[in-house]
Length: 339
Ligand code: PHE
Image (cartoon, rainbow, N blue to C red; front, side, top):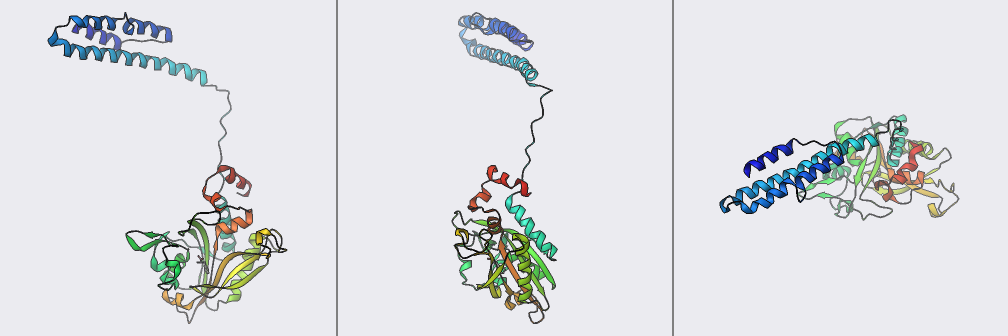
């Protein structure tokens, strides 16, 4: 019986079939009820008890191998048949889907371009920052609410290491390494621990600007921001500055632009005020200059910071901030022509 099994095993390895009918003949020959393997199985009864175990294993191996081999053969010709049927050389190519630039990238680039033309260069810095560059060097008091757990993401094992809450940290890094004149913009992603809704997210994007030199005044700041607003939102755009507070600027202001939708007449978008807020700004507090190694008796400077999402919302009337991070191509494709 052992010899018969070995012989069948060899036979099976050598089998070939080029179509389904040939394969079926082979299957019947070896695997059907009256096939060679079943016949052997039937003979199993006569095997002496002490050989039953070994012989049983051999028989099983033979049967498994035969089934495998039939399946293998089936694949060889099925694969060929299918590829022949599917390959249509006259068919036109699948269209390649081109991606579009993300609306935030489009607007960020536009902001950068405007400030590049005004002589600002780009500065970059880490998103995972230390407390010094985000807060202390920017004149935040030890108990300032912005350091609170509600706003800042802390790295658990290192209370001093945080996700930056604004790109002012890049300004600090530039000041500690460079003496004026300094004229930079700092675009980048920032993180705040906020509940996600249509108007807040736990991360967003900023572009902050810093200009330090001798005799820099608030008038310079206002002129640069007016220029920016009119390039970004059109030549008829008006600006207005309202007094405000930031730890790192003194005096500080928030800037509104005349409402793009109603032209200043008043509408639901501007809550009938005719104005919408777009950025924060001010003269760099002398304490910030000193903390970062710049002589505040010789130099003065201004800084401003804006949210890219906010500018994009105004420009493209996007009502829900969450759209920016959902990757819904129906939304993203709307910006195809703005690329
Ligand atoms: N850092 C401020 C913020 O994140 C923005 C700002 C920058 C305001 C520079 C004034 C001057 O809200």
